Length: 279
Image 1 (cartoon, rainbow, N blue to C red):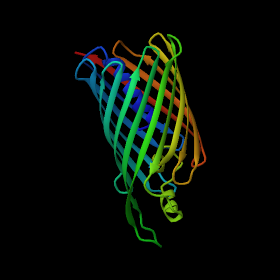
Image 2 (image 1 turned 90 degrees about the vertical axis):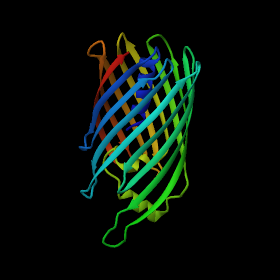
Image 3 (image 1 turned 60 degrees about the horizontal axis):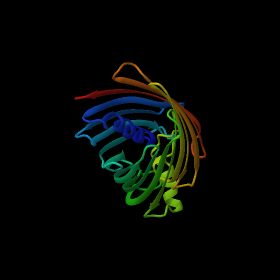
């Protein structure tokens, strides 16, 4: 699951549940021009006026150049409480393919929300387990490593209908990826943004704009990230459109383009459906 999707879930849940008890359910599909696919389920519900639980579950399937297909599972559970004007968010997650590369993650965020500005900082710890598949010339092996991530974000309400968001994140890994390890890890590269290696990033930055037109919303996001293994750079642009289907449901369409040193040029499309409710 992309970072955008996790942040978007938190924003939707916050808007839907800030007034009291309620719930949010969502689900969607993302696919790209290289036939990779990801299916996601999202949810959140209020446990009080300013407290809510959120969760996400997704599975993606990517075919590697070798012909092998890797299925990646992502699961996340988070707790958010807003003390007004400061909020705290805690969460744990699992990501990866247990037969190749996976991680158990924990994260904690502190944010301040004003009338026109929201500022946040986050710490994340990732504990990786990497299994190098055997080949005709080498035996398989396993090793573990971890990473500390630090992030900062800001959201500005430029007017009643227009907002801008900025975010940046950097990781410090406990190991240096030596040339041999590089070759081992790069065997996991595919022609998709959904491949396992795209979780091993060195840094990430994004800039986004949102325009509201009544109950409809347009979003334009620019992002770039650098890989930790081979220092490759990916640049991405995404357009999203959210519109109501009824008083309790929204549908969101997304269309994006990646220009990557790692996997070339890829176009991707997503569609998500959200259901809101209250007690």
